[in-house]
Amino acid sequence: MLTNEQIIEAQQAQLKALHELSTHYLSSVEKLTALNLKLSQDTLNDGTQQVQASLNAKDAQDLMQLQGNSLQPHVERAAAYSRQLMDILSHWGQGVAQVFQNQR
Image 1 (tube, helix red, strand yellow):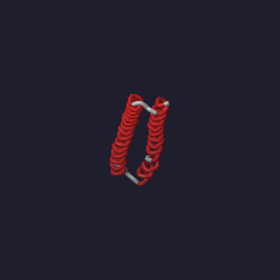
Image 2 (image 1 turned 120 degrees about the vertical axis):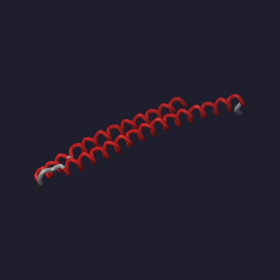
Image 3 (image 1 turned 45 degrees about the vertical axis):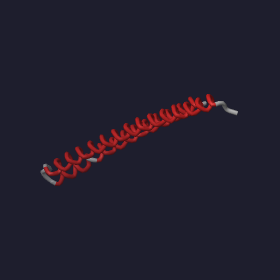
Image 4 (image 1 turned 180 degrees about the vertical axis):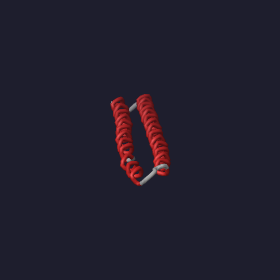
């Protein structure tokens, strides 16, 4: 049978673990939100620049060249986003694992 002190200790340990998980979760959400906001801002800026460059094109050849060059930055941005997203998710998973390891 558990004593009152043992029950209180177990509840305190669970509360501490919940606090650590919540803090780690919120930190990860904050990083993910910042990443998504940066992507949105960069996409908006690039779109604006692309439209401006298209309006300044002198002929169809300039326009076609702009079209061809416009894909590479998007590919690079998608790759960078994927890397950063995986880093955030990996860090989150490691934090969760650490909390559960500390519970043992």
